Image (tube, rainbow, N blue to C red):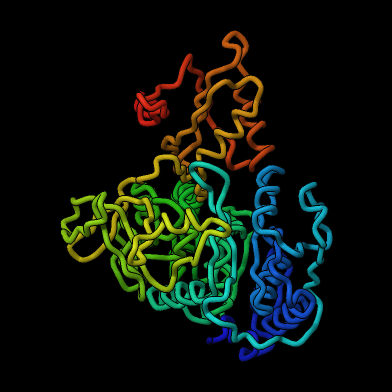
Length: 481
């Protein structure tokens, strides 16, 4: 197996690798710190990583990969119940965290290992088997608790190498982003991507248009973001000449995790002459398609399949749709080395996710243009909400709402939002119609149990939820009514 990070041992010692705010590591320093930590955790069955946007998170994940120990990134804002589920399901032997982190209750019983970014140790051989589990990333399920998608090393390598080919990504590139590090966009693409190429990352800590302007005008060449971030850029760019200069000088502007509205594409292009390119992926598949750096950045599309990825559209019975007319809608199914290997402890869910001949059922509906460009038009799973770059399952929010004593029935949907892409809407039948819980109380209740980005932004009250003859809530009737 080719090393995941050849630059750790082959790049000049003083070459910049990572920078988070004012803190930075060269490749030599990263190799020493990750090597030292790998020596401490080697042999562990699995490790949890409290994935704050810090150097410690990057060192922890690199160390786990060097030690051939699967890492489980944890959202630092997750509520106690969500954390307890992930810990019970993944059973990590150790918790890797920054030395000054104050831990929530569910993490305090784990054996804690503080990450020392100034430690020194030898770099172990990075030649582990491609099928070996690298990460266990928890997805937002639509019908229950999150599932742990097991991503093997070959999936990381295949996706990052395919993106390098499509985006002409090299060790000379400097990436800037402000994405969280507990999902594949910020962690795999945004941290491991630059390190695999031998390039560097400048993490903003917290996204701001001012930070983007500063870093791109100081030599960064690539920007990764989600539609909410690009929406804020589109709103600011017409009145900010420094931001115009920054975006114009960037080599590549990439948006992902949800569709970027066409009007935001247009505002950025009008102000800068530059087009944002989009790509399409999932936790289970990493990246499937992208607009190429040398291709047409066509707003509303996610480009063409990446190298090594097979993609097809199918009917309900898995019959392949051969038409490439930009009109015929089918479910996207993919196959290739970029796919996850299983849902942890869920053989039933794993089997249901694949066809008999190995195609993964994405649940996303799309059309294909004559030149192969893919345009996603809908979702088969209406319970998955894409808000602020996060994929959020309605089911877990509904379960949290039903724990509130003032809620008798609950349903959750998404509705369009100019900033977030979609906002979360809670439909509630109060236990006492004369004294329903307030919207603020409902939002706080969910935020405490799950995570702040999963809180409802809108609360609507009903006398009863619409249901079909089988008792299933008709969410389309809610959204349309």
